[in-house]
Image (cartoon, rainbow, N blue to C red; front, side, top):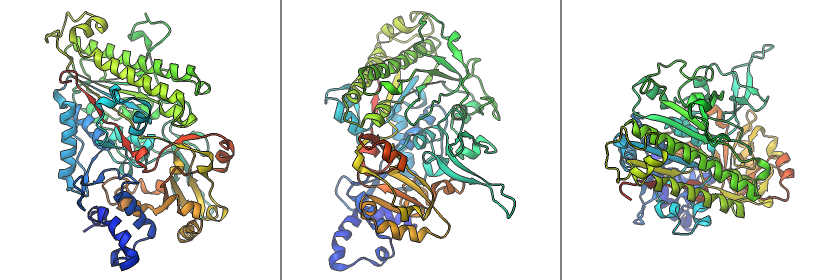
Amino acid sequence: MTSIALFAFALLAAAWRWKEQEQQGPSEEEASLAPEVMRLRQLLSTEELIHPFLRASDDGSTTTTTVANFCDLASACATCCGVSPSADARIAGGSESSKAIRKELVDLMGGTRRQHIILILCDGLGNNIINQHLPPQAFLRKYNQPKKLRAVFPSTTPAALTTLATAQWPGQHGVPGWDLREVMGCDYPGDPVADTVQLRVLAPKITNLRTGAPTTYPSIDDVFVAKPWARAIRQNRALRRMMYINAYNGDEFPSWYQGTTTAAGTDNQEESHENRTASVTTDFSAWQMAGSNDDPTDDVTTRTYDGRDPFEAVKIHETAQETLGEPEGSKAAIQFFADGVDASLSAIANVQELGQKSFHYIYTAHPDKHMHALGTNHPEVAAVVQGINDQVERLCHSLSNRSTFLQKYGKNNGAAGDSEDSSSAMDVSIIITADHGHITVSPDEMIQLPSNVIECLEYANIGVHGKGRHGYLHCKSGLQTALRERWRSHKELSDAFLLLTIEEAAEHGLFGPHQSPLLQVRPRLGDYVAIATTGATLVSPKEHEAHTHHCQGAHGSLLPEEMKIPFILFTPASS
């Protein structure tokens, strides 16, 4: 039996054994484990930390059950678009458990038979943020199934968005976080040929943060490792018109957009949909829609949908950094999201009149962007969350009456292409979720690494807005044992973080239900991952100085606030 399977059976019982150890002593298996591993098991069994896809059974027994993860939602989206990602073998129930979870999501979303599917991803809108800032009767709370879905680990945007694009887990898709270190090649005496990369994918160009220049990977598939499921849509007959509506700009997140775009909410509202198209040059964009940066159809044979490229993206604007914390900032964030909602409604009306199917992905950087700058409790965060709730409710209600909807948004007032009962609701499923949740980190929770720990490291992938809650630590050669010993000697580190080897974390399924990350992914993770068990966050000396007097928002670890994300489903025809 594999160590990952042993963990599945031991998860709940670990808490009981932990309490009994003082009297009876540890078992033979437990005696061979690092104390950090035993503590991980205890915290997972009591759900003080949240496993990406395992939870204690509701009946209080010592067994574990699998729960849907954001990766399963990504797979369900692909399936609803006519692509069938392979099911992974879960540690509880094997591949059959994975198939059952994903089939349930597909069925809830309507599968390939559903005419329109809209996925809305609100960055950072975890269940805790919804519950904190919305009353119980609010639309998002009313339709949320809060126990349905969990985030990937690390609970951070590049890991989640790459999972969404590939339907693969972070240990398999190649981007398990921000600014990942990789040595490109092998040096020889007197012949240094290797380049060291700090990989950042959510940027106008895939960037080496160490130099600020674009990376020099042989191909984009060497960066992401896993292939986007959109590639199968390009290579086969498209089932749906695919539209990506997003804005992702500011904060520590560079600007990036997806594919050929149409600008939503421009000053000239009379400007035609076709005349507002412009090319976008981001590598992530083209890759997500299965092409290269220079040619979106590079290396694939694109099958058109009704004579057109099946993919289209709409760019919505983004809130200026300097307005965060002011009413101007929250008002702009809500308006730009409303522009995206309008773009989706107009496009669905057009597709409906043509008798076609569609998939829409609407992404907003809020409330995450506000929370990173202000923490989770600021009044302007509450204003943004309320505004998102109101716009989602408007979207859903607009699609609840076919005739009224087509009269308002259609080009033909519903006169052509739509033969359904005009008084009925649109055949659409709307799913609202998040990539992760959020916590507030106070200045006294921002922890600098001690000097004798730094002596053991050649790269500390940490940072105040999330990286420091799942810090990837790359040791100097031969100093792995020394690092752990020194770490344990610092109470502020050992109390607030679990310092696990990457193998220990992977064996417990944190990077996905595989025994180890892919060979191409493994070097990017370093030697250890420091998982925060409280609000404590590892920061660089510059960050510590910059945020001496200001709370910041963060995420990336396994706290319930970070891992529990919404699954909000609205189908007008049945609601």
